Length: 156
Image 1 (cartoon, rainbow, N blue to C red):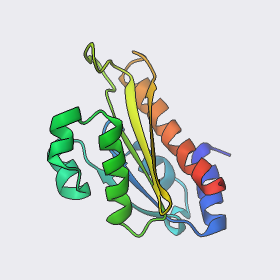
Image 2: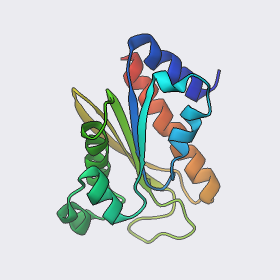
Image 3: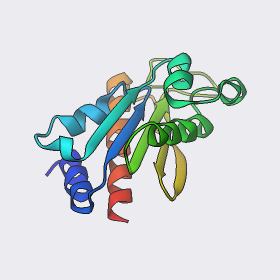
């Protein structure tokens, strides 16, 4: 069973709906879920908010937050996840924002990805440093980690 199948099975067993808010993964989390037949019983919607404008317009991320800490931050990941939860019929939302590469900076290196996981109980965030694995590998690792966060919440 794939990780996405595990997510759908666990969420389906509890009647949970899922939303995503994705930046650097560009919809890969949602694609992994919707590649599976029957996913409509769990998947509500996905937001691909690659630009800062999309983050503010679709998810309600505050411009002040973006200006203060930048898009690749736990603060923005939190606002993205909460925005996806508020703007959907989901019980669980996950957000992903990071630097897939190539490139990065001294302060925000390639491979840094911030995640948010929101439920009615609140929102948790974390940052993982995948390293300069290359764009495709960082995005795949971020997708898999986001799916694992949803699964963990569904099993809690």
